[in-house]
Length: 88
Image (cartoon, rainbow, N blue to C red):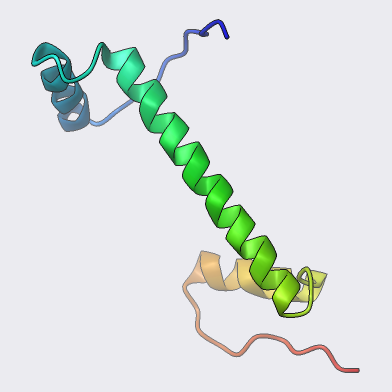
């Protein structure tokens, strides 16, 4: 696949560490290092998604809209209250 050029802002210390790895021959280049790091991060995210999907199937299926709203609120506000319960 043909690479596309983008602009990414990195903290200076990270960029210097990557450049140091390139200079020492541990990475072919900054672009190659970033591409490899993104591939690892994407695979990691896919793995977490698969684990979440499996856990949801084992515990009653996908979240309801009310459960999703509660989870979003908890994650965005760092608030700890009991989750909503569905009644049968």
